[in-house]
Length: 269
Image (cartoon, rainbow, N blue to C red; front, side, top):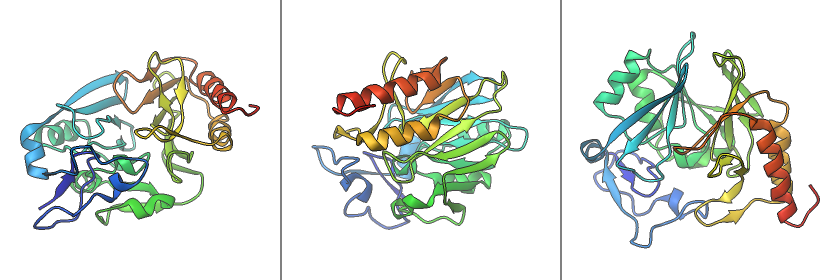
């Protein structure tokens, strides 16, 4: 049986009973709820939840599990002429979601920003014959092996024409954002997971080492993330959670937010 951690959604290898602990939640970048560690069987998740869909622009859909489960992030499906891409992942893959995704052309590649969103990536890959692209720096957080996983090194990886993975680091050493140059209007978009977190109001972003435990990144790391993203052209930012959409001036917002973050740490920007 496949068991999932109810706090982070990570799935573990087939076993008769749940693991004694969730290694992902025991790390300081996540947390164990005050009520204690708990688990749900994959089949029970399918019985209790469903996925809601939204189209954001031509070629870009998001899906999010309702009622909310675990971290409650959303995943994105980019449809491209050379095959569709799932960016980040949600734990629930049910029959309705499979049918909808197949109707949109399936999934050729899966890419995930960081280990908190690995969830059931193995099931998604198996269902659609997709390859999973994960940064090698985060290999230790893969809790359930899959032949579909391909580890990549370095700072960039183009996984389709106009779709590039950028290693930004920060939240995790292999923290990745997706740059989508080939939007229908040519303006480009950035999908950063929560490596770059869009703030309420969509006029600022932030950067953290641990979001639930409110542990910041260093000034040097924030400067480095901002510098890594600065050369890339895009207008919009689609963040990890519903409502976290920056519709214009994305690069300026990231640059301005990074400068202010560094200032508040008492260092020169």
